[in-house]
Image (cartoon, rainbow, N blue to C red; front, top):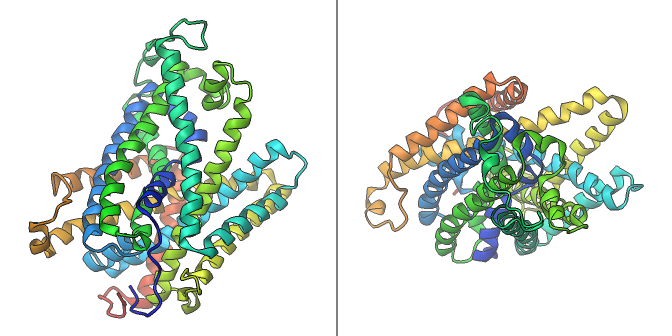
Length: 463
């Protein structure tokens, strides 16, 4: 990182760091997007979420191993630069910026729709401006204020999912809310089998599942602003993975057990229906509040994450130098304003396109989906960097207390798994356009880098 007197302040507690990682990976994709994954593969989507969770465990352990030694802000990109090639670090940072600007746009648009539930006559542009201004000010105040807000956003999502799993289990086993007639587990195989879409449909579903998990690597960005980072990293990696597995696998498992998978598209939100089934008549309002916080959390995490990456890029001469300045509160205020400005611009463009043409309104969906491939770049560079990290630091690894298990075969397994997903995204007509857009974004970034720097090792990085 840049060697300067004023650096990013370590003000995030282990609890906040844990919730940032947890909240970053539990977004509106779980609440709103689960139906689309289920339609491709049926009840076996449970296995899909579990399998992707195992791969993410490998990725997070690889990241945790390196973070334990060097817990710097934006560290997975720093590791990519040091252990793979400066181009890999450059791609990781800019892919993160592009991904979270696009995700931030979609989350703000989703938030305006959720606010419309209570204020149907409030113009979308007004609610969008309020949301963007609120999140921008929160990030400008301090990393601690961001961490506090994200902690409570994540807590709301987590509590809702836990309640939903408990209530769902009572419905399945005891028949609570179903006149005490247990639903049982027959819906897992009674409507076309467990793998309703075959192997192809199962792999297709994983291209969406990996997108819903994106954001878990926020641990590698926020670690640089954590108190006692080694302790926080170990605690966060160990706890976040199994919690995410419980939340995702548990929530999806309850949904496909209670409801026939082929009828989920007609009942509305499965989360709303699960609460409504036991007589909570205000279920729609409760879930609307939860998904609103999920959208705000996603945009909040996006501003935080990508602003730190812009800060790094500015210090590496790959972004305007003004973006590398810190405020009196020791936050990269110019980078935060730049990211918020990008989200605002995208939000305005979406409003304009929606007003003039219904067909161009669909373009935003394509652009949002294009974040999946850039979003996988951090995972790829983490796995590759850890391979070189081990070889370059045998003396450190001799007494390292937090090693990645089954090295290097776990790395190879995770890399092969992601390669299969990317290939099938090109095969699947529903994801072909979006993954192609993501590939074009990465290609443009590579061309810009080569034009500016060539492919030789750079020496102008300041850590």
